[in-house]
Image (tube, rainbow over all chains, first blue to last red; front, side, top):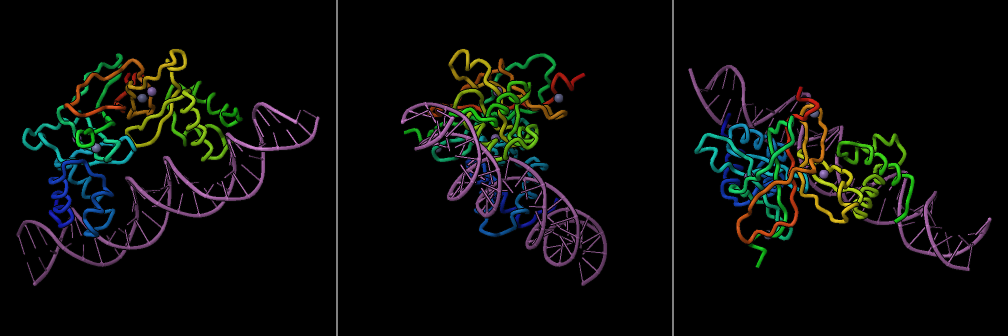
Length: 125
Length: 125
DNA sequence: TTTACATTTGCAACAGTGTTGCAGTAAAGG
DNA sequence: CCTTTACTGCAACACTGTTGCAAATGTAAA
Ligand SMILES: [Mn+2]
Ligand SMILES: [Mn+2]
Ligand SMILES: [Zn+2]
Ligand SMILES: [Zn+2]
């Protein structure tokens, strides 16, 4: 997979962001550097390469964030929680929060999507 | 809130369904009984009245399902899991599955959205 | 039963998200 | 520098969900 300007800039954005970003947020922050469609396709590539993981936010919109441990550990585990602040709108990875649960017999769980909403520390005070 | 034909039929659909339904699925099953927009507005009403609860599926689409214990217990608790079968596409409430988790300090959790995906019992064999 | 009126509905129009096909562009290696 | 093929932009599309407004309808009072 080739290193293009769009890819490089999107990777930079995600690396420097402390919140998960949606394709449209990324497009805005790129100030017209590339087309909307390219953002989608680059993100798809970055996910395949293991640089980012994606999830669906409570509002149904896609969000992308860098993988924290995957690149170092070479193991992909994305069963952590995501937090959506209803005040500032920020969506953050809670890498340390992994839900414990038990499903009824015969259900085979492959992936989980665990999104919390409420007030984040920044907005709490 | 008034009892209209649309509302009655949508309630029937949801009551008799063992899977959660999206507005568009409901619209289809109503065979043109009412407008698309009406489905959205009726569902909104039913949710306010406490007959149904809604959540966002892994694919970002809204899903509605009847409340099981709420109407009898008069307590609303919707922190249960939802299961999305990747084979048949069915989305079901797992009323008994409630995730256990702990968030970092200063995070105030108001609601949770916990969606599992994998293979359902029907498709497992 | 009729009337009055707030609620509900249909329609049209819209915003937003995500996808696809295709022609043109540019990265990477030789 | 040339060739190959991945990548990009554009246009067009499908789908989900929302809103404003005029017309229809449910409900309760007259
Ligand atoms: Mn994450
Ligand atoms: Mn449910
Ligand atoms: Zn916040
Ligand atoms: Zn299934």
